[in-house]
Image (cartoon, rainbow, N blue to C red):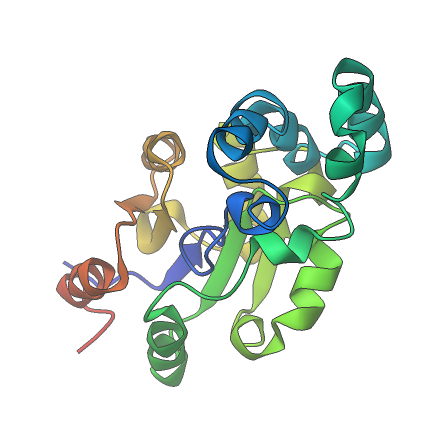
Length: 203
């Protein structure tokens, strides 16, 4: 089999650790923390930011539903980078190795258009290895919508059958495979390293 010609990475929980718990465990603990993450700042609520909605709108709506948590909800935006404490183990070295081998690297991320610029500015070392990054909040399209994969391939100038796509979310991986990408479900760096070596992208 001819080796793939490029890689598209997801970012959260593939390249970088991400969890709202990292932020809110400074303010809450135990069942209070668990219930706040489960019932207030839910994945469904945050997904609206990835889809392009402004935090001012989503937070106002959420505060109206949970006025007793208004201060904690308000902390989401100014402290969002605290939900991303650093890279996933082994991934900076893996990205460096792929870059050194001249493998074209791209990213496709579900990420708020408001929260992305400060994060990108903070993480220049790894992201400077990437040729382009498509951000869902800027496009107002989110994974696993097939349209966002098509847009990424068109913008990056890539052929699906020749491109590896890596994501930790199974639904996103299934959708990527559905548009013809070589889709890998991310577990950890050692597993991914073996999969990329099998594809001829690493020695």
